[in-house]
Length: 182
Image (cartoon, rainbow, N blue to C red; front, side, top):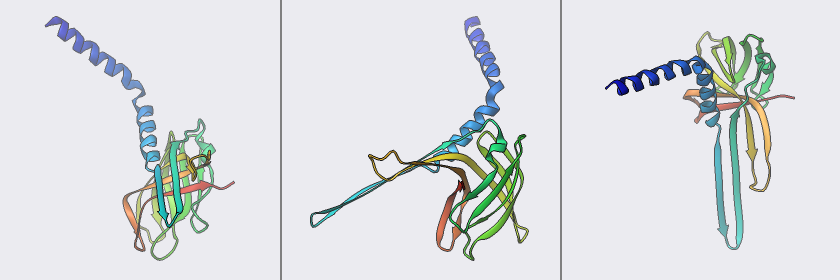
Protein backbone atom coordinates (compact mmCIF):
# COMPACT_ATOMS: atom_id res chain seq x y z
CA UNK A 1 0.00 0.00 0.00
CA UNK A 2 2.83 2.40 0.83
CA UNK A 3 4.45 1.73 -2.54
CA UNK A 4 1.21 2.55 -4.34
CA UNK A 5 0.75 5.74 -2.33
CA UNK A 6 4.38 6.74 -2.98
CA UNK A 7 3.93 6.10 -6.71
CA UNK A 8 0.77 8.25 -6.79
CA UNK A 9 2.53 11.08 -4.94
CA UNK A 10 5.50 10.95 -7.33
CA UNK A 11 3.15 10.98 -10.34
CA UNK A 12 1.27 14.00 -8.94
CA UNK A 13 4.53 15.82 -8.25
CA UNK A 14 5.62 15.20 -11.85
CA UNK A 15 2.33 16.55 -13.19
CA UNK A 16 2.56 19.68 -11.04
CA UNK A 17 6.18 20.25 -12.07
CA UNK A 18 5.40 19.86 -15.75
CA UNK A 19 2.48 22.30 -15.45
CA UNK A 20 4.88 25.25 -15.49
CA UNK A 21 5.02 25.25 -19.30
CA UNK A 22 1.37 24.42 -19.91
CA UNK A 23 0.47 27.86 -21.35
CA UNK A 24 3.17 27.66 -24.03
CA UNK A 25 2.22 24.08 -24.83
CA UNK A 26 -1.46 25.05 -25.14
CA UNK A 27 -0.67 27.93 -27.52
CA UNK A 28 1.54 25.67 -29.62
CA UNK A 29 -1.05 22.90 -29.66
CA UNK A 30 -3.81 25.34 -30.67
CA UNK A 31 -1.59 26.77 -33.43
CA UNK A 32 -0.94 23.26 -34.80
CA UNK A 33 -4.67 22.45 -34.62
CA UNK A 34 -5.64 25.60 -36.53
CA UNK A 35 -2.84 25.17 -39.10
CA UNK A 36 -3.94 21.57 -39.75
CA UNK A 37 -7.31 22.89 -40.95
CA UNK A 38 -5.45 24.27 -43.99
CA UNK A 39 -4.10 20.83 -44.96
CA UNK A 40 -5.50 19.43 -48.18
CA UNK A 41 -4.76 16.41 -50.37
CA UNK A 42 -6.28 15.86 -53.79
CA UNK A 43 -5.18 13.27 -56.31
CA UNK A 44 -7.45 12.25 -59.17
CA UNK A 45 -6.74 10.40 -62.38
CA UNK A 46 -9.21 10.23 -65.27
CA UNK A 47 -8.63 8.25 -68.39
CA UNK A 48 -10.92 8.43 -71.38
CA UNK A 49 -10.24 7.23 -74.93
CA UNK A 50 -6.54 6.90 -74.29
CA UNK A 51 -6.16 10.39 -72.81
CA UNK A 52 -5.01 10.51 -69.22
CA UNK A 53 -5.68 13.58 -67.07
CA UNK A 54 -4.15 13.75 -63.61
CA UNK A 55 -4.91 16.34 -60.94
CA UNK A 56 -2.64 16.64 -57.92
CA UNK A 57 -2.77 19.17 -55.09
CA UNK A 58 -1.16 19.00 -51.69
CA UNK A 59 -1.30 21.78 -49.10
CA UNK A 60 0.32 21.66 -45.65
CA UNK A 61 -0.09 24.35 -43.02
CA UNK A 62 2.65 24.76 -40.41
CA UNK A 63 2.48 27.32 -37.59
CA UNK A 64 5.05 30.11 -37.97
CA UNK A 65 5.78 31.47 -34.48
CA UNK A 66 8.06 34.51 -34.31
CA UNK A 67 10.20 35.57 -31.37
CA UNK A 68 8.99 39.18 -31.75
CA UNK A 69 5.21 39.45 -32.35
CA UNK A 70 5.73 42.86 -34.02
CA UNK A 71 7.23 40.96 -36.97
CA UNK A 72 3.65 39.96 -37.93
CA UNK A 73 2.80 43.60 -38.73
CA UNK A 74 2.02 44.06 -42.40
CA UNK A 75 -0.50 43.99 -45.20
CA UNK A 76 -2.03 40.65 -46.05
CA UNK A 77 -4.34 39.76 -48.92
CA UNK A 78 -6.80 37.00 -49.76
CA UNK A 79 -7.55 37.85 -53.39
CA UNK A 80 -7.53 41.48 -54.52
CA UNK A 81 -10.89 42.34 -52.91
CA UNK A 82 -9.99 41.10 -49.42
CA UNK A 83 -7.00 42.94 -47.90
CA UNK A 84 -6.08 42.91 -44.20
CA UNK A 85 -3.84 45.53 -42.61
CA UNK A 86 -2.44 44.36 -39.27
CA UNK A 87 -0.41 46.14 -36.59
CA UNK A 88 1.12 44.05 -33.80
CA UNK A 89 3.17 45.44 -30.91
CA UNK A 90 6.23 43.76 -29.42
CA UNK A 91 4.06 42.95 -26.39
CA UNK A 92 1.61 40.98 -28.54
CA UNK A 93 -1.37 43.36 -28.70
CA UNK A 94 -2.87 43.66 -32.18
CA UNK A 95 -5.31 45.77 -34.17
CA UNK A 96 -6.21 46.01 -37.81
CA UNK A 97 -8.74 46.53 -40.56
CA UNK A 98 -9.78 44.31 -43.40
CA UNK A 99 -12.42 42.84 -45.68
CA UNK A 100 -13.97 39.38 -45.94
CA UNK A 101 -16.33 37.76 -48.48
CA UNK A 102 -20.09 38.16 -47.99
CA UNK A 103 -23.16 37.67 -50.21
CA UNK A 104 -23.38 41.44 -50.80
CA UNK A 105 -19.68 41.77 -51.72
CA UNK A 106 -16.60 42.56 -49.61
CA UNK A 107 -17.54 43.28 -45.98
CA UNK A 108 -15.34 45.68 -43.99
CA UNK A 109 -14.30 44.94 -40.40
CA UNK A 110 -11.99 46.23 -37.69
CA UNK A 111 -10.01 44.00 -35.34
CA UNK A 112 -10.14 45.15 -31.71
CA UNK A 113 -8.61 43.83 -28.49
CA UNK A 114 -6.32 41.58 -30.51
CA UNK A 115 -3.72 39.38 -28.87
CA UNK A 116 -0.92 37.27 -30.36
CA UNK A 117 0.05 34.20 -28.32
CA UNK A 118 2.72 32.16 -30.08
CA UNK A 119 1.43 31.99 -33.66
CA UNK A 120 -2.26 32.38 -32.71
CA UNK A 121 -4.11 35.68 -33.14
CA UNK A 122 -7.39 36.22 -31.30
CA UNK A 123 -9.45 39.40 -31.48
CA UNK A 124 -12.95 40.79 -31.77
CA UNK A 125 -14.06 41.47 -35.33
CA UNK A 126 -16.31 44.58 -35.43
CA UNK A 127 -18.28 45.27 -38.61
CA UNK A 128 -19.43 48.67 -39.91
CA UNK A 129 -23.03 47.93 -38.86
CA UNK A 130 -21.88 47.53 -35.23
CA UNK A 131 -22.20 43.74 -35.06
CA UNK A 132 -19.21 41.77 -33.87
CA UNK A 133 -17.87 38.23 -33.66
CA UNK A 134 -14.85 36.35 -32.40
CA UNK A 135 -11.77 36.24 -34.65
CA UNK A 136 -9.27 33.39 -34.40
CA UNK A 137 -6.42 32.78 -36.78
CA UNK A 138 -2.94 31.36 -37.02
CA UNK A 139 0.19 32.74 -38.64
CA UNK A 140 1.44 29.94 -40.83
CA UNK A 141 3.62 28.79 -43.66
CA UNK A 142 1.40 27.18 -46.29
CA UNK A 143 3.32 24.72 -48.45
CA UNK A 144 1.55 24.17 -51.79
CA UNK A 145 2.48 21.53 -54.38
CA UNK A 146 0.56 20.90 -57.58
CA UNK A 147 2.88 18.18 -58.87
CA UNK A 148 4.31 15.20 -57.03
CA UNK A 149 7.80 15.83 -58.40
CA UNK A 150 7.72 19.56 -57.67
CA UNK A 151 9.05 21.00 -54.39
CA UNK A 152 6.17 23.45 -54.43
CA UNK A 153 5.83 26.95 -53.08
CA UNK A 154 5.69 28.20 -49.49
CA UNK A 155 3.46 31.15 -48.67
CA UNK A 156 3.53 32.98 -45.33
CA UNK A 157 0.31 34.49 -44.05
CA UNK A 158 -2.58 34.50 -41.62
CA UNK A 159 -5.15 31.74 -41.76
CA UNK A 160 -8.54 32.71 -40.31
CA UNK A 161 -10.84 29.91 -39.16
CA UNK A 162 -14.62 30.46 -39.11
CA UNK A 163 -16.43 28.52 -36.40
CA UNK A 164 -19.24 28.05 -37.31
CA UNK A 165 -18.64 28.26 -41.09
CA UNK A 166 -20.10 31.25 -42.96
CA UNK A 167 -22.43 31.10 -45.93
CA UNK A 168 -21.26 33.55 -48.60
CA UNK A 169 -23.77 33.51 -51.41
CA UNK A 170 -24.34 29.75 -51.51
CA UNK A 171 -20.72 28.83 -50.72
CA UNK A 172 -19.85 27.62 -47.23
CA UNK A 173 -16.66 29.28 -45.98
CA UNK A 174 -14.82 27.57 -43.11
CA UNK A 175 -11.40 29.23 -43.50
CA UNK A 176 -9.69 32.06 -45.30
CA UNK A 177 -5.96 32.49 -45.98
CA UNK A 178 -4.50 36.01 -46.11
CA UNK A 179 -1.03 35.88 -47.72
CA UNK A 180 1.55 38.51 -46.71
CA UNK A 181 2.01 41.04 -49.52
CA UNK A 182 5.64 41.59 -50.42
